[in-house]
Image 1: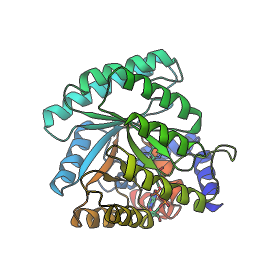
Image 2: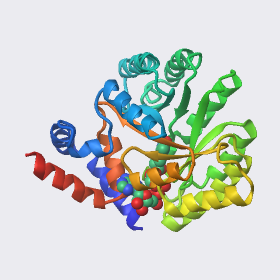
Image 3: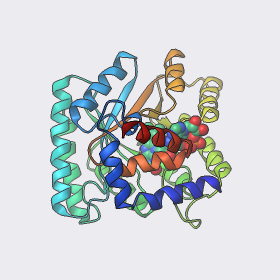
Length: 311
Ligand code: FDA
């Protein structure tokens, strides 16, 4: 109940222009600014630096150039060009090759066919260079179309791509069977969007139970699944299930978000598990940042202290 209220509250605030202007002014301007806790920086060079630091700690990464809800074709082309430039920059930097992107960033709201073309252009440059490209999952309005596009690309022979499934959606257990039958690589998350009751569980216990069931299905039947959570109960459950079913620790990976539960990140690596960190960067960081606040209202105090310190 509280979780869904806070998601709703921060969803509403994320539409505020004043707040966005204020956050943009104070959030990233110094290395100590508050948004830098969750966002690696505004430039690809800063993201690459963050990635190098992770690699030095034995942690993998996936780079996400922030941006979503693009409504014009020009905006979508611009995002595509930025992704292509990022592929080149990552190759040149010699760091791990793994990207995450969003279909609304590539223009799915403007024109579906153009968004698919944009994604294909990125894949045509990224896949031969050895990249893995994860298509993030957005709100439930995009679930069906995202899976449909993923399957079309899969049937056209793209294999270095993966999807994300959200345990808060009622449809997801069926989607998981569908993705496992394909042999697709799935990242399992709880779901970051405010969703209506008709399509999503509203209580945290239901979302957690669905997550627990699906992580077991994924570990036993999935193709190199990504268990993406900071929830210690889910991490323990995955570790226990893998141990009890003799599932080797190099056949799956844990994933976490940049700046969240760094204590658990270090612990997982020390225990010998594979860990990948989602490294978001770019100028369009506000909606991503607001979702992180909505997940944990205690973060608001952290931000307020940051703003007070900045002025
Ligand atoms: P839960 O919300 O129960 O939190 C468990 C614990 O984690 C908390 O008690 C707290 O300690 C810590 N924690 C969680 N969120 C925090 C925060 N914001 N700040 C500080 N501490 C926090 N979602 C989506 O809809 N589509 C997507 O494509 C993705 N992609 C994605 C990639 C990766 C690598 C991760 C880890 C997550 C996503 N998500 C996502 C987000 C996901 O849906 C979910 O909102 C968050 O991971 C929070 O849920 P937890 O599983 O961590 O559990």
